[in-house]
Image (cartoon, rainbow, N blue to C red; front, side):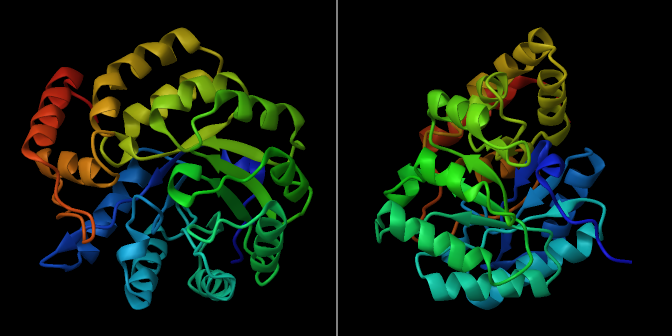
Length: 300
């Protein structure tokens, strides 16, 4: 049976930016499958493996493929899978697009090329060249703090008219940028928050969900907050947003995904450490994470 093609409407809700679990330095496929099952059980919209949180730059090509293959196989059509495919090399990104499609992904998360610092015209050429090599729907990924360049508003709106681009993950931290995009974007192009701390304010100006780090830990509670917000019950959503606040702040003390992996380990969801060149979190960060978990209290 053929899959229903992912559209902007299908992006609504919570997606987990999945961590990549390691055991003795290798990908822990069993734990990876467990994390996918947690997302399914929580009723999330989708999962986004091998992105920033999934440590894609530290994976070999064969490991990158193994994570996607395991994720797709475990999901088994019960939840959408949109892996990170972007690199700073257009040809390699095109190859990743084809590979992700062959592995059964539902879409592709396409970050702006990092380090190269392309002009808007260079970005446009790169995105179009990558999107046109497969039939995968594409979510653009705006994260200037990691890439050195952002995706300008006008370029995003231009790409939004192309049928292969269905949305944008915005981790730029600028609510005015998100508000302008949501106001001007066509109805078949969705905006997702890329920052858990800004999910609620972004939804208030037109975003329709989040690709979330904290949902690795608390998928049901994250979904509940987003569901409240999308229904217009901002009072209930704000209550959960405030419950998350201390932990969300602690998760930014060091480079993602170090803190979220440490938090999962503290809670007994053993995902191993981060890979070099990242380093395990400092003792003071671990202490702050434990304190934030205690303040959060019980959750699932």
